[in-house]
Length: 280
Image: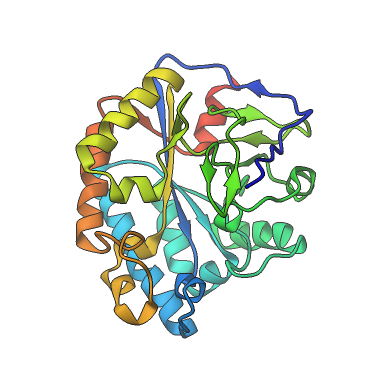
């Protein structure tokens, strides 16, 4: 696989470091279209309901642990469950854009999703994450009114992307858009995203986060709502076991344990709060 870098010629200005580690927990709130990647059909009702169940579980865990998070939400999901958008906002979380549709993207969806989410939440929507961390022209994201993006995983994931030369800490693109890379252990580029969180023994994953925090003072991990719904494990979806491992109550318990562990290492804040702290 050819390793490309989308950062050539960009201004890799990094955000100034804070003394206390910043913990950025985020969730990609989307339709559960994953079965389609494995050749299974799934009705829209199932796509949305499975993600709704998982989203409610996530919000319950965050309420219990008093941790703040950022929710990258698709427009289609937000239209269907506006009450969940209100709950996110009312409990101090940030709502950001995950496009309009998880399975389809058009440039017009950038601004369309931003305006819809702002209407439903009553808050400024300043962040964007592309479905499956796919590449989107940075200037187009900025032109749509976004201030930051978090669609970069600075690792090599066969069949998806190869970003092993990208920075591991937040930085500024040449167009002025802030980029928040998903966390990976620097140097060895071991990823700490959702697949690692669910498949590594939890003590090993905790150790990896400690190492990363010592080197970057920032932790940015995302997962999906269907990971917290046991229905995503049904055999009819044809999804490999390593992808839906622990789905449901076990995954929620792992998330709660991780949050409580990391609370002694830093502060859980939203992406907007992270940027705001560096403006003062």
